[in-house]
Image (cartoon, rainbow, N blue to C red; front, side, top):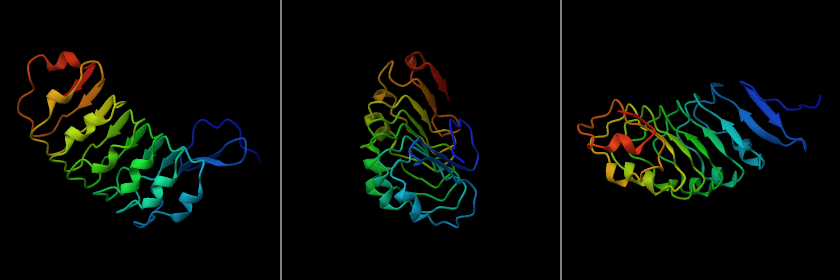
Length: 186
């Protein structure tokens, strides 16, 4: 049967009016660390939830998913991203929490539409300043990492709306900094 206007799903997919897969949810399906190559054939994919699958590497072919706006790869075993990741120009929300990143990935600079990044519960110690080069980034979640030094001076007032840096090793927040943000969780 034809699928129409599905707004909620847990595991499965959504088709558009042309019967092309636009949403794919395959979380916790025991992929055993392998990123399914078939995903890269879904050229109209906008939403991908592939969390909790033990994935250790995202292949470079991810850069070919040019329509992707939402990517959730939390609860895996990632410590880096491929160079081609920066080709995801339409990506707006990126969830990388609960992985093994020790540094903020280098290849986020091409993500010109990115508004939200979640790097919660990794082992990040450095590279946070790279995030402030992303012009549309408004929501940053870095809680439960190992950050000692945070580049408070890089935050432009009115740009970042929500910042969560709780449960890190940051000792001092500059006076008056809280007024620069709508929400600060420290």
